[in-house]
Length: 346
Image (cartoon, rainbow, N blue to C red; front, side, top):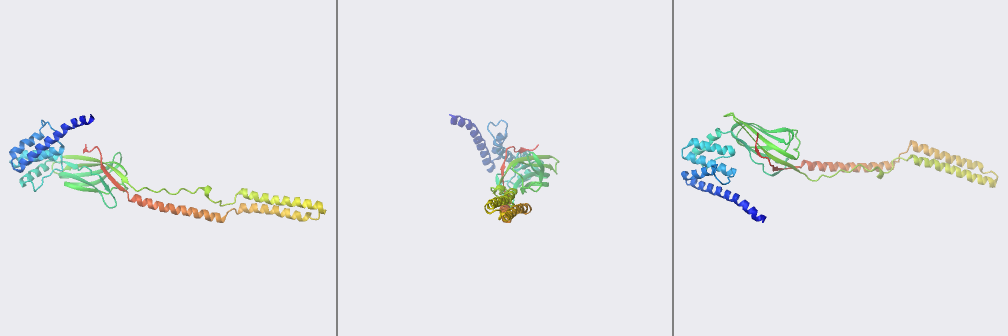
């Protein structure tokens, strides 16, 4: 059911385009046979407000161009200039092929260009650009000598970048290296290319602009290694708890020596008491000395060395990762695509 409705809705548009294209084709045939009087009414019919069928912008420009060419052949120079101007105003890139048109027609067309200032930018074409080796190219035109400014700006951010400023006459290719005024790679987003011109012949002004979207194509970046988890590192100093354990061990030995000495003294009549006292005192002193030594010199050299080696390996790995990421960022490609909003400037 919907297919039938869509087909019925599309039929008038297809018929309209076919009717206009058919009539325009007939006019071209008459012109090529120099049957100007037969071509003129067909062309006037296409540009007439009363023409009932759809006329695309390109078809209208073509009809105006051939109206001017026919009238120039018929010797009606003023009328030819008028129609040529109408074609130029609608498409500033309009031109005549010297191999298809006479010198008189070309001269009339040049006169129309001198009386009509129009600037324009060709629609942006989708492209993938490597800023290291290629450039984004914009095609701009001024119909005759004019002071022209071409500026690029990100929508809603930053100051515009001037790509061209000077006199222009005709078509000019303008290259952009993908960098903004700060010499950094343009970030992703929507951009506008604005062209403003003022005629050096008539003083008239005109402007145009196009929009495009910019995206980055970049290889996936690697994550650097995080800081080492302190829980996974070896202890680099003997803890206060270990020192306290040394003191406790020394005191334990001393206490054990005294107990043994007491038992022996009971059996032997006290003859071994002095030796036990010496052992106990020595053990106690050893524990205290060990505690003080740990407080002053608590480092564990072999652990310090092992941890330093782990940290150096992590730092070296991160340096390599950052280097690879930098290379990938430097190889970022720009993906340019046309965006909605193309039209004449204010």
